[in-house]
Amino acid sequence: MWQSLFASLNDQNFTVIAIAMDEAAAARPWIELAKPTYPCLIDRNHHVAELYNMVNVPQATWIDELGRFVRPPENAGSSDAFRGMDRTTLQMTPEQIAERNHSKHSYVAAIRDWVSKGPASAFAYDEAAIRKRLSLPNDAIAEAHAQFRLAQCLLHRGRHHEASLAFGEASRLHPDSWAIWRQAAEKDGSGLAVGPAFWARVDALGDRPYHQPLDIDGMGKNES
Amino acid sequence: MITLLHEQAETSCATARVRGRDLWLAAADMAAATGWSLKPEGLCRGDSCVPIPPGRAADYVDGELLNVTAFWRRMHHPVVHDATDEIWVLGTNAALRSNALQSLEAPDFALPDLSGAITTLAAQRGKKVLLATWASW
Image (tube, rainbow over all chains, first blue to last red):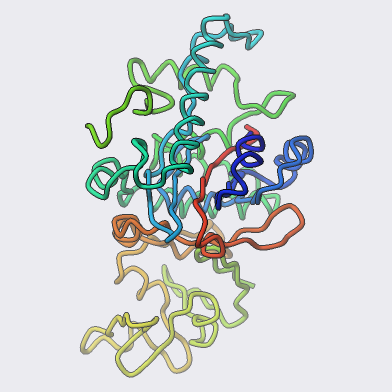
């Protein structure tokens, strides 16, 4: 997904670290197809999601040379255009595809701007702006991750029914996490959790976003 | 054999014993599984120590064994386990995670690639990093 960006910026002291919130077996075909030359790590326990309070994919954070946040964990350039797709064929209209591409391209352009200009980039936040946008976990979320960890261990041991109960408890404790819900959900032949239960959950969002809107487009530095 | 899950570690503990709703294990196993060890000040890791409440030593220590779940609950960390008490998760509470995030230093982690080679975030120090998640689902 990030290979062309990485290849063009790799000589500018920039790297991508991709985290697959997935089983190695499920991630492997995708990684072998894309042949990325940046680190592609496997995180079946969703440990990074727990550390960074992430709830969906793709989410990303920008980290500077000192290991500090430049942008907090957020939507990595995805749009909600998919919500209008044909739910049988999973096809999108040209307008929806254009919206999706615009969102992605704006995000990638912002990354390029930051890699080139560093803290002077309009897309690099100052500390106050980062703090304002930082999403922090609560006790229920912390317990949800403990339940998720238990569920993955049970699954690994073939104790499917108990695993399913623990996944359910994790989702109940952390309903905003699509990552927890989709990891455990029924998958179609392509490995996608896009059955009726997924769409019912998406529809239940109502006016709320699936991918949190990103303030990249036409954004002034550190505006709210 | 009881399995203890803490952060990224999965440890089999031969000394673990379940008593009621509590898990007890040898101090050495506790240190191996979590990095917390028993000192005169209490249960400690790095500069942090959790003292044993006065007059309640028997609830926390029994010879070589420590009541790890009592310590864990006292630190307000989540403790969850399976129905047969074979798998215990010593979780990390929201306050600790939140404090780490609010330092604005990106939390470090160590994860394997497909070949099993471990990469850490800290090893990328000196570069700008786009840390991005994805999934097959």
